[in-house]
Length: 425
Image (cartoon, rainbow, N blue to C red; front, side, top):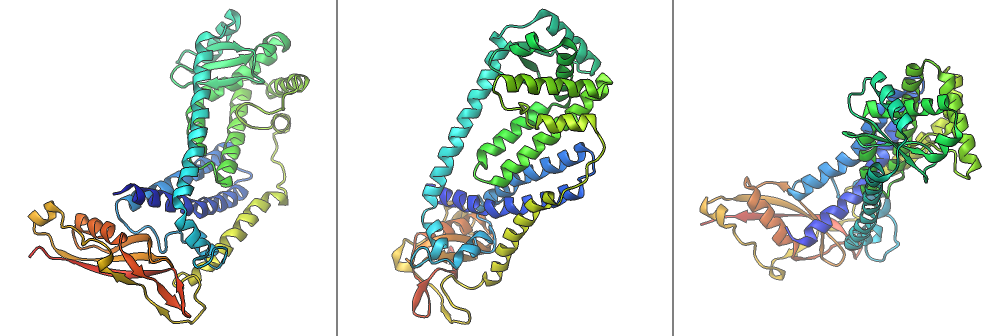
């Protein structure tokens, strides 16, 4: 596989991930409406599954593409069909424009993902350095160890004092550490600080650090999709509520944790910090939930994200009815199929291993031919019975030039089928 093939497959997968994540977001928002009265743990699991699917679906499709399998009905089943009717780029529409600039799209994605990955790595390095070099407090370190035993945590949990934090942060899995702002040690009553530490120990007991790290990785890879950020934010909100519930049960005093969060909000406000927990979750809403744990009535506004995503998906799916119709062709217009010019490229070279085995057969290939006669996408429709023969023919014929398909006297982008016969005799 050439570098150009790899770039093409990655680019096509990125385009497909746009509608895939949108569909997952629609289903997740509908599920949240149905689970509005359920326990936070239930919503948390549903959201984590949805976020994981946002990564696994494109990953599975990319794996299929790299192995020469069919990747879908037309490359970008919904997005491409929505854009197919646009004439923003002469001679091929937006669909042709996207295919012609996949290399730039992949380069931009790689640059942004690399920058976010570097930021994530630097954050992890800062946490590890803080765990080793920041000062500790003997009294609170001992108190934290005693509380950890009460939570049933067998691993040693360390406490470090940091000057530049707005609220406590838990990091690490095998050797967890709780980073506590210096301002809390000096400005918060001990019983309230103990409640905040109980909340952090709930995160340690649940190994939330690993889930949060996985979220960061998915956000880095799929940074361009708002559904990913929305799902990730909701996961953090539910996670904070779960930790609040565990800490309140362990303390036996939900109001003490609520008072601790209220005091944390006051200290953050007085030092010009946003009243936002480090791991997500608005402090005021968490305080109200602890003080008044009864289920709140659902607002109609909760359905707005679902309706918005539903409209977008329905609009896209409505375009799939023209999947078999080439961009630029009017309804009912006859289409002259693209023709392969075998003289424009070298003949596929028989793989030595397949030739030694005298492998033979006919492979049925499909090529998406642009208005310039170049191949923009390809896939195996029917195998010859030998994967090496299939891939060799697909890669070789992708480099050929075609006479583009025609409709109403105008060159159009369209799929065409080519059969190649392998015969060792």
